[in-house]
Amino acid sequence: MVTPLWPRLIATTTHALASGTLQPIGTQPTLITEHDVPFLIRTLDTLKRKDDAQRRLQQAGNTQRNPFLPWDPALWLCNLSPSHHALLNKFNVIDHHLLIVTRDFESQLSPLNYNDFHALALCLQQIDGLGFYNGGPFAGASQPHKHLQLIPLPMTPCAELPFSPLLARLQGDQPQPCPGLLFNHRALALPAELFNDPQQTADRLLFYHQQLQATLNLNPNNAAEKKPAFNLLITRRWMLLVPRHQESIIGISLNALAFSGAVLLRNKAQLAELKRYGLMRGLMDVC
View: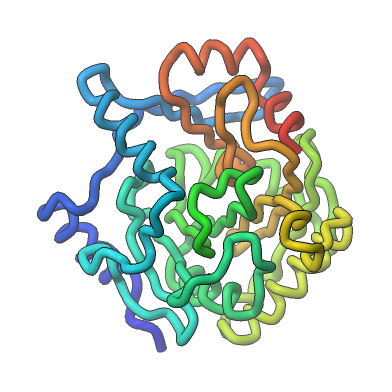
């Protein structure tokens, strides 16, 4: 049994903040509704802190170094399994942002496997959260070392995620488009009892993931330079897979969280530009 995660996550966060190792990026949230679809937009907080936040974002996206080998001991939570351990995200925008990292180097372009889903299932069994994966640079991956991510829910006071009311309409565990989400994707509802046994859960999650890949004609066994880019999002209630062909629109990077309805922007000018362009149109254009 893995160490109880939530108390360990709180304690490690407290110590890492006190030591200055954990360096949160402050943002201002804005809720926007576009054609009855809600979005949560975060822009970097206050002019005084923007330069520092920009620097932290640049460090977080630096692919010239591997932040996971060696990892910072102050950010380490526990070993989840022989293949994965849990770390805090050093430059977190959302509180208690957890990284699920392979202990040995694996490429972020390599297919997700049983070990990946087993580690994720252990976390989701203990923390009601959103697990997500940025499959390659075109999908918003900023680091080449394989890692999944998890944020606790709810994200907003009104709903666990902006798109949760739409995803709650999914019927059954067969791949299907979600009504109201106009970007290219397939999703399915997960059985309520799925997370009772992490080992069986991992098998089932891998099976569902492969079903969604097949439905979208994403072949993970292509040569490395041709591997399909994708975003995967998972809660205890549903799984969503999004194929990608570009990383950004109008200079705005979009990772997996964008397909839950949450977008990070650098300034209010980007917010105005994205509202003119159209938020759903932006998601459609990168898929």
